[in-house]
Length: 277
Length: 184
Figure 1 (tube, rainbow over the protein chains, first blue to last red):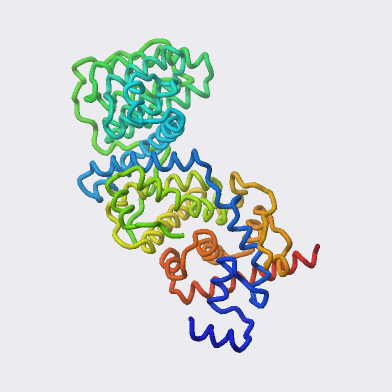
Figure 2 (figure 1 turned 180 degrees about the vertical axis):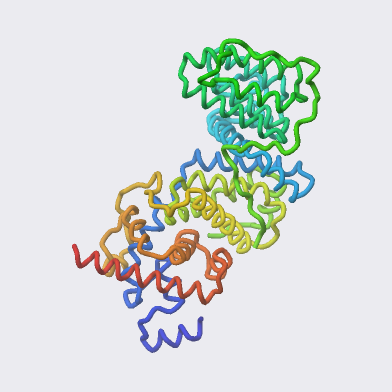
């Protein structure tokens, strides 16, 4: 565009050339430019109000990308990474949340490594709990099923049944991503309990005792369909068994293979990029 | 508008280095969020967070220079935006979140020829007269700071078509501004 633009400039041609438009965009437009009157609008669009992102959000983005990149690096290939993303939709929102908490807290606390030991003992609701989960996501700290179940129990004991159910859904989703039906049922149960109020919450607390019992006994080899079945009984309006914990399936159910083709809808289903340009 | 030592930063980010991701995020985030705001995305910060997650998952597959990287980022962003709209099954009409409504200072040279001061809300409102394609191009060029070539890659059109969209969009905005001035 240079030769033509130079010629048109010399001839005093006032119709905006490509170069004029570039000048408009970089703020060096002159009054003869055909689009000079748009300069104020361009400046407004480039203003701080449009492009501003606060520091906490920046740090949260950084932390979540580091965590996610570490997780992706553990996948054998890009294709399987994409497949895994599609099959574990809950992890995205979960990791973003904990990373945001970790990032914000780290700003004030300082060294992340120094926080690791203290954070590992954090329980849900503690300031350091988000850091605990974020560190576990990248392989630091315990983060095993037993630790998670203790945290679920702590939430139930403090009356925070919906949060406990959501954490249980995370446990299921983290260790058995093939059991989307179970994690989805747990999230639905959390929503039901949440909408049912405190009375419902108390009834559900008793009901989920069976769920905890099953998860505790079976560890990571829990029976996905059974978990889903128990979860669907929690917080139901016509649940005549509310207050009566479901019967724990016991050791006989442990390690049973999940039913094929079970894939409940998840609340968050990101569409991964398909290819690069 | 460029990242010093981009190749090293990219390589370090691909290895998972936090400092490298910090550099990339600080460079990309304002353009990304700003672009989503100009396109009327309801939750621009949230959608940008989704884009960063996608970047983190797929950065190891990227190879190229900084220009290619910017194009790649906004191709992902553009797809994310389209997906979000398809899920909502409606065009965006909400006011973007978190905008300051204060007037913005313009350069002295521009003050003589344009509106004395255009607020950010008013500027975004003016963009609504553009077609979606024009708005894409204007947002990518002005806010994201992409070149014509990079913009063409993101929107999947030839450079000539991008130039035409850019010119028509600016012409529409010029007419809108003229009408605003007359009505004042």
